[in-house]
Image (cartoon, rainbow, N blue to C red; front, side, top):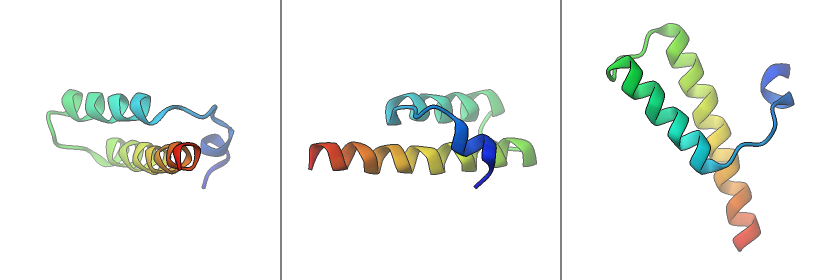
Length: 58
Protein backbone atom coordinates (compact mmCIF):
# COMPACT_ATOMS: atom_id res chain seq x y z
CA UNK A 1 0.00 0.00 0.00
CA UNK A 2 1.43 3.36 -0.95
CA UNK A 3 1.98 6.24 1.47
CA UNK A 4 -0.40 8.37 -0.59
CA UNK A 5 -3.17 5.82 -0.15
CA UNK A 6 -2.65 5.39 3.58
CA UNK A 7 -2.57 9.16 4.24
CA UNK A 8 -5.94 9.87 2.63
CA UNK A 9 -8.85 10.78 4.84
CA UNK A 10 -11.31 7.91 5.13
CA UNK A 11 -14.06 8.22 2.55
CA UNK A 12 -17.46 6.59 2.82
CA UNK A 13 -18.36 3.52 0.78
CA UNK A 14 -21.05 5.59 -0.96
CA UNK A 15 -18.56 8.29 -1.96
CA UNK A 16 -16.10 5.71 -3.26
CA UNK A 17 -18.85 3.89 -5.15
CA UNK A 18 -19.79 7.18 -6.83
CA UNK A 19 -16.15 7.77 -7.80
CA UNK A 20 -15.87 4.25 -9.26
CA UNK A 21 -19.05 4.78 -11.28
CA UNK A 22 -17.81 8.16 -12.52
CA UNK A 23 -14.48 6.67 -13.57
CA UNK A 24 -16.26 3.95 -15.54
CA UNK A 25 -18.63 6.47 -17.10
CA UNK A 26 -15.80 8.82 -18.14
CA UNK A 27 -13.83 5.93 -19.64
CA UNK A 28 -16.74 4.50 -21.58
CA UNK A 29 -16.23 1.21 -19.74
CA UNK A 30 -12.68 0.66 -21.08
CA UNK A 31 -9.88 1.49 -18.67
CA UNK A 32 -6.34 2.32 -19.73
CA UNK A 33 -3.43 1.35 -17.46
CA UNK A 34 -3.59 4.52 -15.34
CA UNK A 35 -7.36 4.28 -14.98
CA UNK A 36 -7.06 0.59 -14.07
CA UNK A 37 -4.65 1.46 -11.25
CA UNK A 38 -7.00 4.20 -10.03
CA UNK A 39 -9.91 1.75 -10.18
CA UNK A 40 -7.99 -0.86 -8.18
CA UNK A 41 -7.12 1.69 -5.47
CA UNK A 42 -10.74 2.87 -5.30
CA UNK A 43 -12.09 -0.68 -5.06
CA UNK A 44 -9.61 -1.58 -2.32
CA UNK A 45 -10.52 1.57 -0.39
CA UNK A 46 -14.23 0.84 -0.95
CA UNK A 47 -13.81 -2.68 0.47
CA UNK A 48 -12.17 -1.28 3.62
CA UNK A 49 -14.98 1.27 4.00
CA UNK A 50 -17.65 -1.42 3.61
CA UNK A 51 -15.98 -3.61 6.26
CA UNK A 52 -15.64 -0.63 8.60
CA UNK A 53 -19.32 0.20 8.15
CA UNK A 54 -20.26 -3.43 8.83
CA UNK A 55 -18.19 -3.38 12.02
CA UNK A 56 -20.07 -0.30 13.21
CA UNK A 57 -23.46 -1.87 12.45
CA UNK A 58 -22.65 -5.42 13.54
